[in-house]
Amino acid sequence: MKRISGNPYLKKKEGALLIDEVLLNEILKTYTTPVIIFLENRVRNNINTFLKVFKSVFNNFQCLYSFKANFLPEICHLVQSEGLGAELIGLPELKLALKLQFPPDKIIVGGPYLPQELIEKCIQEKIKEIVVYNMNDLIRINSVAKNSKIIQDICLRINTQKYGSKLGIFLNQSNVIKLKKIINECENLKITTLLSHYTTQMNNIELFIKNVNILLDNTKILSDAGIKIENINLGGGFPEAVIMPENQLREVAIEINSLVSNFEINFKNIYFEPGRYLVGDAGLLIAKIIKVTDNRWIFLNIGNHICPKFAKSSMRFYNVTRIEEPHKFKTSIAGILPTDQDVLAKDYFFTYDLKEGDIVVITNVGAYNLTFSNRFPYLLPNIILVKNKTTKNIFNPLVNSDFSIN
Ligand SMILES: Cc1ncc(COP(=O)(O)O)c(C=O)c1O
Image (cartoon, rainbow, N blue to C red; front, side, top):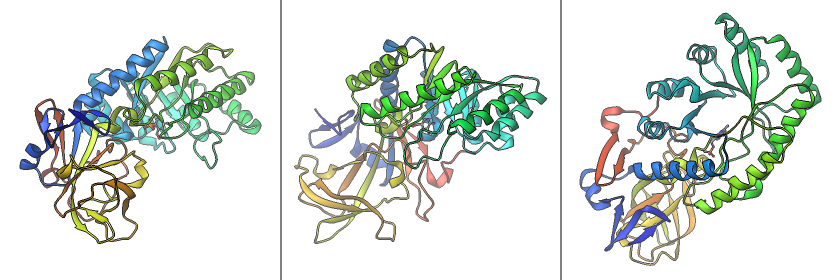
């Protein structure tokens, strides 16, 4: 059977689409389009590949799943069951992670906005590290830690200096002096880790090398200033697993390891925070053509509200109704938002015949699509989880009304 979109859990079978071991046509007997499908076995498979590769290359590696990529409780539960830790940005995610029994010593929390309640919860729950993007937050964390009589481990996110990057601390001379002063005054904090996340969808090994070098240079700057860093965190940024096969992932890991091992400081731990790699190609969207124009534009019954450009997913489109026909005729694909900006793809290679009612599958929408989805007064899609021959409805818009976490 031929794979679709390079995904081993998506296959053509006698003119039909097999999703894990379930025929799409069977699913469409119960659910109308649009419907979102997640592949449990693909999430587990991606986690195992990532762990296998990185464990074989590093002996001090830890993997923390970046919840923001996909915070559906069922997906986070799968990740927890495979033993990964969690990288979180806010209180709703922290509450979810604790409910799902991620151990606090495998959770790190932080970001550009640290409300007081979040800091207090992190300290009360003894989470492993708080990630700080703004130096002044150190003073606020210290005061809560002091009240609780604990020493809180801190990870500093550094600014990568990539063009336009505003996130993290830029360690120039004056900021290093300021940081030293704050650290001296904050007796209840221990700066243990430095984090650098370069960008998303890093398809090129050079980007990983850049990120490591930035992190090592900044570690040296701090070390020269008398601030010793024990661990480094290289963030995420891996593309979907179908885009970065195992051998390429291994090359990246080996290159990172060689740069880190040749550095003058030995680190206790190296953390990675993948999001997209683990879940991106485990998500599919099933939609329907609702209009065809003379100049080969098709309109689907979904749009940028659930398939947002911000997600930067490597979306691929297939006409499942005509799955055996060649996909080599340029077609443009629009969504159903009443704006001309709702374009999903331009001049995409698709089938020659285009008919209203044709079923279209969009692959690689498992990461950031729901995260960046926005309100539009259409009904949200059902979300189902497929594993082997079984399907489970994990979100029903008529009952659950919203898939957000609170
Ligand atoms: C600090 C940090 N870690 C991890 C991630 C996850 O990135 P990805 O899903 O590209 O692996 C992000 C994404 O923005 C991030 O900002």
